[in-house]
Image 1 (tube, rainbow, N blue to C red):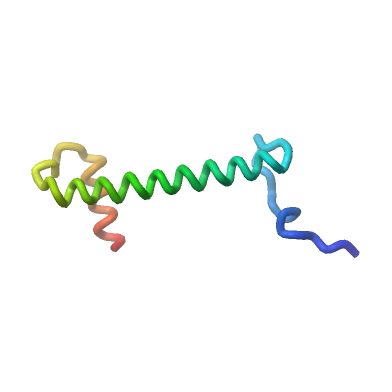
Image 2: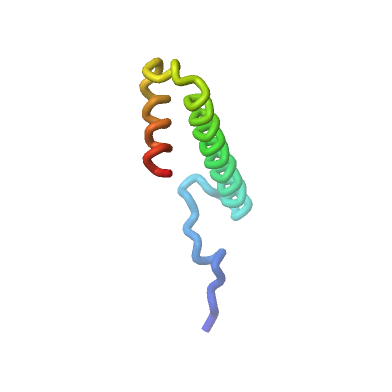
Length: 71
């Protein structure tokens, strides 16, 4: 009986071709998550420093409130 490794247990996304594409997708997702976190952190810092910006952009207010509630 053959044992399967963790890489064999992965399901490939519909657009993935060879296994190398999966690594590229993983790296892309990791970069995207890091960028999202960095933007959220900098937005929170900006909103702390500039209270006059509150109410200017609803999305910025929403993200700032979400960060505060999750802390």
